[in-house]
Image 1: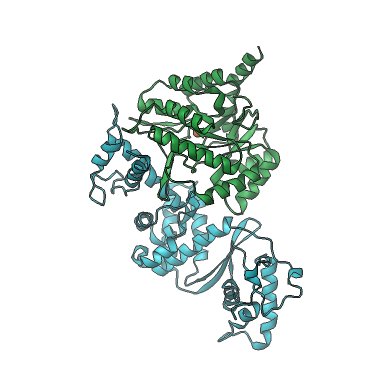
Image 2: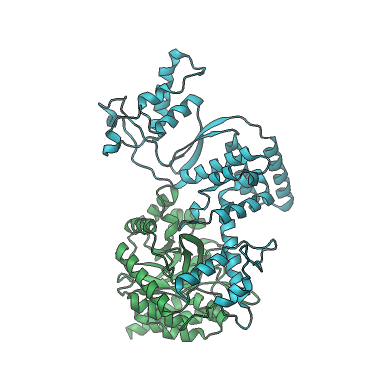
Length: 283
Length: 304
Ligand SMILES: [Fe+2]
């Protein structure tokens, strides 16, 4: 959604993920980019070069934080040290909102460093929503949850993934970071219609959208963020934008990272859809 | 099944070591059938069995943590050789799975673990241990906390018999049996070259490095691993210099620290005061001391 309470009433355009191979290019050439998304964990440190570079980026660009290890869906309580460091970083970046995944990845204090899929149960929705509220209350900015791509489904599930996403977002009263590539990947792995998913998302809660490329294997698709965005994903993106309007959009490219310009050009392809959304809104 | 229960079961399966051919084990170390575990919690689909779906996560877990660990310890890898390093890494990660939200801390228990399980370090245990200490110190120096540095005026009127100086958290002091710093720099230079090099070039480099490791003779060194601007440096210290810094780091008062290192020191008694002054000058210029704490803990008398 353009400027809503889940993205801090901002109206950001097209961003790209801040990745170390591009630091030099960004700091010396100062390309025009609407905003950068950073992986929070890379900067939840005490000092050193990463923070110095971040400060230089912050002088010139808008930055939004995206986390990979809060594990809203883990049954255990949030780690206090993690929360404390996250808040310190939030104060540094002044990120208008913050996102992390609708998944789990740690149990009994042991971390898998993976985004593991949720069982879609009411109990899980309740626990997850409670944790999102707890995190938001601590860091004091809006939180958006991102749908992950998955390769497994659980017997205990009581609803579809999109119903679960809605259930959690409603209970937590939080925003959604809609990853249309993840929807596509999961739809292929679990044989559902990705449009049904996109059409079911509560548009007014969408704070941000992710687009990305992925790798196809013989029997499943892996969300690897190492390719350009494929056509079916652009189609889902178009539909999402049609439903929710001009929304902050970010291209993720994490592996086999090409030049900055190549990544930026790929991201800017989203403009054709955003432009028509703006036009539709104006009419 | 309750959420916590499901997550415990799945995490245990995901963190179970892979077979030698990097597949999920049919039987977990505790005797559970992985097929039974998988089909109890995970649905099959038209292309994959429950076992195969769980295996995707099992493989992803191990590939991810092993890659992150290898990235942090290229020096230990050079010392042990690829095959032995991989076996050691698996054993370490089984004993010490990540307990932190960040992969940065994955190797935080390696030195301790290697001390307790020296057989994993092969024939050159001391060399491998020294390298692990250096590489962990390097990680700590890279992004450790830098507190405000001590300024000369902070010391005005302070009683040296009670004065306790604190070292910056990013500085590590290492007494090593091998000059592993040079070897590590060599390894890094090589891996930088390897990114762009041909296979034959790689092979030649690999052999060169293996012989550099084999030739490395024990020769005790004292190092401060620290950060200047934002680059990490390995600074060689004199034995006496190391002893003073270590004493300060251990919480001894300034007076006690500078008295400690002189037994069997070749530095003539008459030269010691000037030498100490020179060292202090260097340490201060490098910003190694933090400002004095105003907490009551620090105001109490030094232990000596
Ligand atoms: Fe994403």
